[in-house]
Image (cartoon, rainbow, N blue to C red):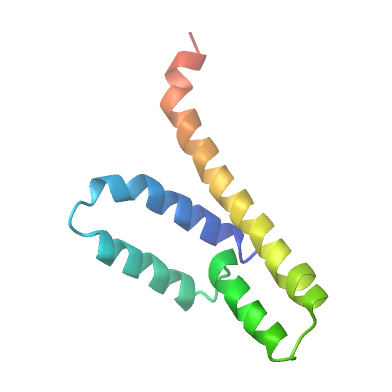
Length: 99
């Protein structure tokens, strides 16, 4: 799960930044994907395909694929993405809260 939190944060950041990188979307996605792969981090979409392949090849069971990888990674991605969204949203309305 802990390797999924930074990826959730990175992917949420990508959603915020993509609106401002007109024409360079490919390079932003490439750079973020490279950072995720370089760090050995876990994303639920790509990881689910890997877990499914291992399950289909008989290397692991379906329970192991879901309980030991997919669900913890999903939880980490949600925590990281929600955390960044919360910080950004709070920063945007902080001035309104003190009034």
